[in-house]
Image (cartoon, rainbow, N blue to C red; front, side, top):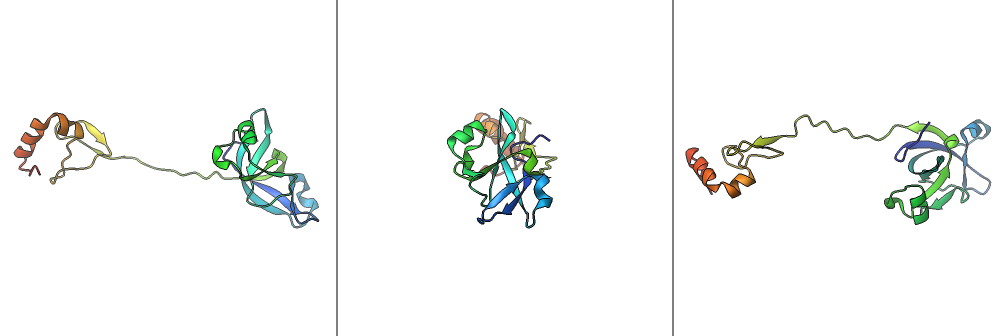
Length: 161
């Protein structure tokens, strides 16, 4: 499976005799008791070796696996600068227990709204009424066609204040 930056994955870890966490390959899961699952974010992938994956660690893996993200690792693995100095670990695809669903935000905006100018009839997205009677006059008409705006207000008996 191909992994991408931003994917969430679950990796396996077990406490070793020193009390730190060793990361496990998936095939080793049944050989150990007390295996822990950790949900992690993929923040970097080596462009020359797609099996060299960098994850953020919200736990404390053994120092053999973990490191702090520095400028060299950021440039070699295309890691965003916001992750500088965060704790991370190198993993391989064989260490990924299962993929997590991507966090997606869906915005359904069927009608973004807006109004047509009463003077020039141009539709302006996101515009709202700016006159007491619910009419909209665009900024351009207010600035460049002031004579038309005044006559429109007078015709529709709208106070110009």
